[in-house]
Amino acid sequence: MLTISALTLVFGVLLAAFVKAEDKEYPFVALQTCRNKAWVARPFGFQSYDAPNAPLHPARTFVKNYEFPYILCLTNYLYVGETIFIEGKIDENPSLVTFNLLAGAENLDDHIGAVALHWTQQYAHGNGFVTARINDQWDDLSSVLHTGLFAVNKPFKIAIRVLEDSYEIYKDGVKFGNFAHRAGFDIVDHIEIVGDVEINSIRVVGRHFLIPFKTKIHGTHLMLNDRIRVEARTFSYFYVNILNAKEDIAFQLFVDFNAKAMTRNSLINGTWGQEESGGQWYFQPQGYIFVLEIVNEDEHLSLMVNGDAFATFKHRVPNPKEDYIFFEVTNDIDIYSFEVCSD
Image 1 (tube, rainbow, N blue to C red):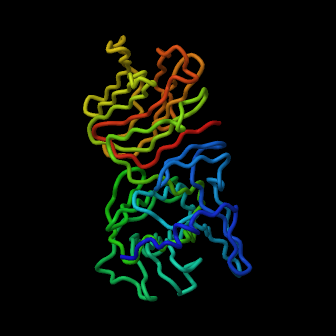
Image 2: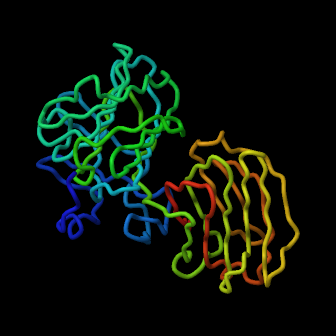
Image 3: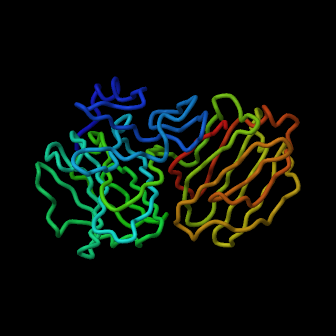
């Protein structure tokens, strides 16, 4: 497998909004969901952004004739742990849709470089599968990953996670399978989406998170109106802790998927507070990717999952503008992305 070169590290992070290739301009792929300022977990640490590097909702790119695919340039080559999240909707009468991870080419028709991953939805033939093209030769059909077809005229969500040996494939929030690397993931530089589809958002986020995961928020503390956003999945239960400067548990959320129960509490100066429970269960079944958000508001922390509010937790610290210092997650949880939005 190819490895990341020194040139990748020196020149990988680009600050412009577009990259030019000959007479074409390709927008960069988004690195955050935050609308404004963000503090984001990246492969080699945390990065602060004053504004999004690119819009979540991409524009189509004119290529030739009447072709307007989505072509996006990566700000850096892919790293282990990163995940490509794509949301969209298949057209009402589709014929073909493809999702391509390209290395050394901007579109599939170039017949140069490598197609590290080619996820095709062939509605005209009733086939959906993942394959690759190396040295202008497609993989043997016996080695493709069959995925079936996305529902017509309905929203879809897919995720492609980079592992050391393969891409981990997700459909609508749940893992579908793995596709072994045919080319080095660390040479992929463009994403191309072609066909009868409307893309609503695309982003490349995350890293490999060791569990338990603990970090000092912003490198300082959680600020008022900040929003913590975590994308993760579990098969049993997990804890989320926000700690003060003494590393007391200023807030704890316990989520038990087996019992479909959630509790909230604090442990300050060695004493547990009054436990709080209840709240609507908005999580999908075990193993599905969910989005957990915690917003630091004037009177309380607001808690949301998959965009739906399920509880609040009245502050038990004297100064919530400065007293939430560390964020910690433990037990059975797999994290895909972590960011703090200052909207």
